[in-house]
Structure formats: C-alpha cells, structure tokens
Amino acid sequence: MSWLSLQGHFGITRRAFERALFLIPIVAAAWKFGFKAGLVCSIISGLIMTPRVIVSPWRADATTETMVIVIIGIMLSWLISSQEKERIRQQSLTTELDTINEKLEKQITKHKRTDVELARHRNHLEELVNERAAKLKIANEKLQRENAERKKAEEDLKRAIVALEHSNAELQQFAYVASHDLQEPLRMVSSFTQLLAKHYQGKLDKDADEFIDYAVAGAKRMQALINDLLTYSRVDTRGKSFEPIDSEAAFDQAIANLRVAIEEGEAVITHDPLPPLIADDLQIVQLFQNLLHNAIKFHGKEPPRVHVSAKQENNEWVFSVRDNGIGIAPEYFDRIFVIFRRLHSREEYPGTGTGLAICKKIVERHGGRIWVESEPSKGSTFYFTIPTIRR
Amino acid sequence: MNNRKTGKPVEILLVEDNPGDVRLTEEAFKEGKVLNKLHVTQDGVETMEFLRQKGKYAKAPRPDLILLDLNLPEKDGREVLAEIKTDKDLKRIPVVILTVSQAEEDILKSYNLSANCYIVKPIDLEQFIRAVKLIEDFWLTIVTLPPNGKK
Image (cartoon, rainbow over all chains, first blue to last red):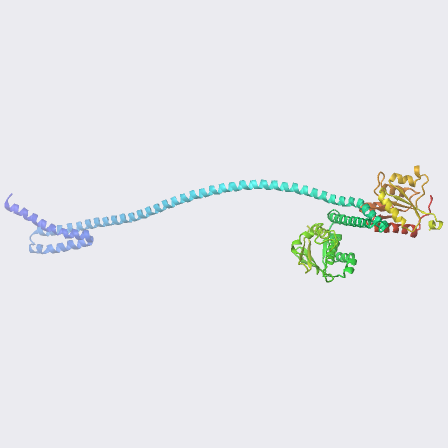
C-alpha cells in the first residue's frame, strides 16, 4: 500500500471516527430522554457537521458521512428509546406484577391465617358441640333417671294417698263407731250414778256423797267428750253436700241456738251483711255457733261484744268474728285448733276442747282456712275463708 | 179415760234387751202419775209370744201401749214392728219406738211401717226421765186410745 493511499485510508478512518463521536450524545440523549431527544440531538449533530460540508462542499463523502451519521443517529435513537421504553414498560409491568403478587401473597397469607383460624374455630366448635352433646347426654340421662324416680315417687304417692284415704275412712268410721258404741255403756254409768245420787244423797255418809259426786261428774264429762268426738267425726262422715245457702240465715240460726248463753252473758252481737255461700248449711250454723259461743264464753271484765263481718278476696269470702274477750297469746294460735287441747282449767272455763277443732274441720271440708289474730286481754279475731267457687 | 175410771192399771209392754234401760224406764214410770203395769220382753220372738198370748204368756194381758227398742237379739225391733202393724188384731196398739239410733233410715223405716212415734233415747238421765214421763202423759192421759180388746 502507498503512503498516500495509506494516509488516505487513515484519513477516512479518522474522519469516520470523529463523525462517529457525534453518535455518543445522540445515544445518551435517546437513552436518557427518549426518541425525541435523540432526534433533536441527531439534527443538531447534522447541523454541527454542516459547516464542514459547506467548507469543503466538493467533498461528496463529507455530505454522505453527515447524512449517514444523522440517519444512524435517528435510527439508534429510535432503537434505544424504544428499547428503553420497552424496558421501562417491562420494569413497570414487573413492578405492577410484583405489587399484585405481593398483594396476592398478602391475601393468601391472610386467607391462610383465616383458614387456620377457621379450622381452629371449627375444632373449637366441634369440641364445644361434643362437650355440649356430652353434657346433654348426661343431662338427658339425669332427666330420665329423675323421670323414673318421679314416676316411682308419684306411684308411691298414689299408693300412699290410697292408703291414707283408706286409713282416714277407717279412722273416721272408728271414731264414729267408738263414740257411738261407747255411748250405750256410758249412759248406764251416768244414769245410774245419777239415780244413786238422786235416791241416796245425804242418806249415806259424807264420803259416799263425795264419791257419788265425783262419779256423776266424771261420767257427765265423759259423755260430753264422747258427744263432741261424735260431732267431730260426723263433720266428715255425716256432712251434707254443698248447696247455695244464705250465711246470714245460718248466722241467725246460730244466734237462736245461743239465746240462753247470750242472755246470761249480756252479750251484744252485731254483724255486717253476710253473703250467700255454697256450703253445708248445718255446718255453717255450727261454725258460727262455736265461734260465737267462744267469744261469749271467754269474755273479759266487760260484757262480751262480738262483731261478725265478711269481705270478698279473690275467690273466697273471708269471715271475721271479732270479740273483746281475754285474748290469746301468739304461742297458742295453733294449739287452740287441736282437738281436746285446752288453754284453761275446767274450773275457769268449762268445755271439752273440741269447739275450734270442729270449726277447723268444717272450714277445711269446705276448702277454706281458719286462723286467729289476738293479743292477751285485747280481744281476739277469728278468721275463716269459704271459697266462692266449688272445685 | 176408761182405765182411770175403772181403776184398772194401764198395761204397758216394754221391749228392751238392756236390763239397765229396763230399770231406768221402770224408775221413770215410778215417778209417773198414771197407775200402770209395766211388762218387759227382751227379744222379738218373746215379744210376739207375749202379744199372741202363747206359751208362758198364755195369760198375758193385751198391752195398751208398746215401747219398742229397734236393736234386739234374734228378731229385731223392725221385724216386730212390721209384724204388729200387719196383724189385724194388734195393729191398733200404739207403738212408740224408743231407741238410741238417730239414723235417718231407721226413722223413715219405722214411720213407713206405721210406728206411732219415734223417740231417740236422751242420753242424760233427767231428760230420759222427762221423756218417759211425757210419753206416759201424752199416750195415757191426752190420747184417746182404741177400746182394749179384739175387734
């Protein structure tokens, strides 16, 4: 190769190298700022190179070189910018994907946690259900056991009631028969001791008279007791069926029966209007009579004043018999209704101790209650109830 | 009264199985004003023999009044009453039921069988004596009885 050609070759190469340097800012601009920047840089590069073309316009290769550089610049710009755009797009896509992924993962984690929790809940629920079921089973068994026990108890109760009714009936029959059959021999004892007294009082010695007196008194008392026992047992055995009655008429009858006691005791008996009842009228007469008789008998220093009234409460009539008598201490409120229980000596107040027991039996037969409110020396009020509706 | 006019005692038949009651009734009649003769039979069979003058009672008088207890051994008072009141000779004799029974069925049955009255024996001696005296007073002095004899 000749020097000239070598120099010529070298010169072309150097120029090409110089021109190629323009590509660097173009590529940088395109890479950094996109295709438009690359385009602008290519045009600017072309303009910068233009003076050289103008300086040596004869040099056709210079023009060509410039054109080539500008075109290559534009192409590179386009290529790089589009590449960069794509990269950025890819990057943003990746970022987006990452975000979605992250979100998804979070979601999944959350789901997993929820699942775990759910499983835990389910397990717990199962445990609870099992536990509940076990408890239910135990309760059920207990219930069944209790049911069986209750059934047995009910049967026992039924049997006991039957036995009780039987024994009650027997007892009533016994009380009735005993008192009835006891009357006969007792009548003999009583009658003949009285005859003895009648015929021989004062004709024997003093001791004989005393003995006869005691015999007569004892027989009379026994007779009174048996009589009252008979009355007591008759409340159930000889009671009449319940019918509509006028309790005021029953009250009037009781007053008539007590006429002597009322006159002797100078008793004043008053009453409010008394209601119609569904009851055994003879027993209601007896009930009033016993209560009024007690009110007169247990009087204080004043002559007896007795007031009877009635008021309706729910499904029953509450009667009250209030007196101004000696009263009763609270500790005896129950005892007075027990048959043959007495609070006073016979010398103080005669009687057998059956009056209130009979009252209680009559009231209970009618499905009512009887009680007393009292204070010693401040009078007593006896209350009893009679249901308005018959069951 | 025919009996008092003639001075003939009133014949009373007491049908009672309890000697105590018999004695008490006797005591009560002793206090009575009317001259009377108390006969006693203790059961139904004996009573019918007395009334029909059979056996040992062949010479028994026909009673003017019968006091009849209901509870008797063997033939009881209800049967005796039925028999008396269906016998055409005996049915005119007044029969006073004197018993301890207060049972309604006894009272009804006795009147249905034409008892002339029904008296529950008072338990108390004084009242018993009073009742017997009243029976005597009523039936033997107030009431006009049918002529004594078979018609």
